[in-house]
Figure 1: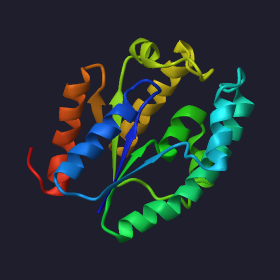
Figure 2 (figure 1 turned 135 degrees about the vertical axis):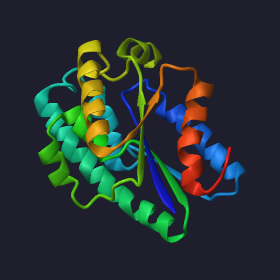
Figure 3 (figure 1 turned 90 degrees about the vertical axis):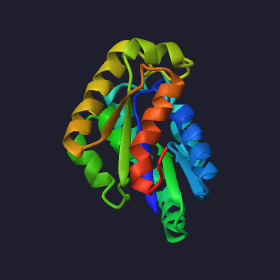
Figure 4 (figure 1 turned 180 degrees about the horizontal axis):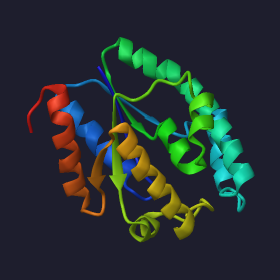
Length: 192
């Protein structure tokens, strides 16, 4: 039916908003599945371990992570295509756009993700970097001001280029959820 992706820097509220969106859609009677990047596959678990390394934000680690994320997404495609065949709504915490924002080499990321299904709708949760960092647990070594500021700028460029819908995630959780519902409602034929 529809493949919706929530994007944004770490600490932007994607996981929280995904859970709220899922609950809201199910209350309206939709069948919903959620997917996350990285997944819980062996590749996804390797990604999570690498993100804890002190060199995670370095160029070599970022290229390696780009490849691993592409492999992890290929493993996720079967689940997404199956959900589409059942007319379910798919909501995702990240997509290949996050690799473009984080790894910062769009042409290469598009090439290694050329077999990945693009989301029908991307909502960028845009948040000030300081606010995002205050929400992070500090386990990932790339969760630092300079790196996330660069990623945030990359996301905003992607949003403009690819017509993402941008939500101000500096607002409270409930306001952000209301903004997301306002975006999605007309696309699923439901009114708030």
